[in-house]
Length: 406
Image (cartoon, rainbow, N blue to C red; front, top):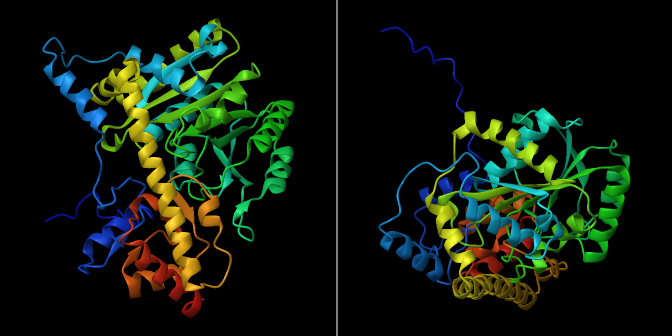
């Protein structure tokens, strides 16, 4: 039989993040713990579907007038309007002046990709600066969309905090008009965010150089438990009347991971520009996936437009955020109790789903080998994958890794 015409295809490496779960699934140890993937788990280690999401879905199922027709290229109109309001604020002048165009996309990844392709076609500067480190998918998304990726300093391994001076220096050195990717809150993978004062300095610097802000908002409400607090960075850049871009995901804050629900918003100088921008976003989306799926966006819109359901959502969202914050405290306390060498206060200072532990690749592989704990090799752990039951096991492993595998 003739060889396959694809015989030359080389096996691609496992995705470094999703590959952690593949390895975890192959392990038969009863004490194994998966701290690799960014998905919320209950105290019992189970995935969570929010009650308000179940209720919204039930309402949609019971509504026999609903059909499965295609959405428009830009998606569900209600969803788009409500998503813009959620991130920019109900009283945002940009919304009132019709300067915002919002399109429904395939979660955060899809929103970033559509935004990047639009910029590659219609923006004069094709360089995007992304933080070092950042989510592993960012450089791939932007490169494939046709942008050239450069890095700005962000994390300082010495303090396990923000390298603020390095960040300012790198953005100062960036060419005028360059695009800058900013994590709106709960920076992934480090859990390190600028303070409000630092955000203000970043905003001033970026506006003075004409740098274009592109926000990735994957954790609104999930970081602090407060939807408005987690959107402050974005709103500061909208309040000054300048232009900016925001990609939103409902994967984490509504637990709609597999529904792939997201939105891309572009804030423009005036409504005329916004409508032209929208017409070109359609040109990006149509040959990519034609139009987005209807179910997840309908779930979100149902919750956001009903006051009672919205309030119920904020309570459930805060409970998720609070559990993660309490896991941070428990892990920190466990490290203190074991007298583990080093300063571990960064565990409680960082915010959001992830903690950048400061452990190196050798220590991580030691923990996997000896303690069946699975995490990415950069030392990032998903706090959402921890529980009161697994904290002592993780603390033992970290203690051993620091004292024996250092």
